[in-house]
Image (tube, rainbow, N blue to C red):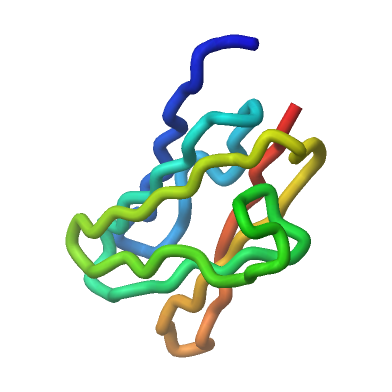
Length: 101
């Protein structure tokens, strides 16, 4: 098994994640950095690749550089979605995908 790797995801000033898709392995960490002016809360579509797999609650990221992370559990394989609300005139929900191989 390879050494764990950190996969950074940056949420830009307009609220979009970059990259929008991350390919990772069990034991790796995904770290989100929020560069927008709004605080956001990451939510997971269950089951999730993080522990516990039944929880949809992810990290809350403060505005202007707040960070949060999650470590992928050892039994996760597949595609997992995450999302967050971004206050725009249309009240967008944005997010991405974590692909665990």
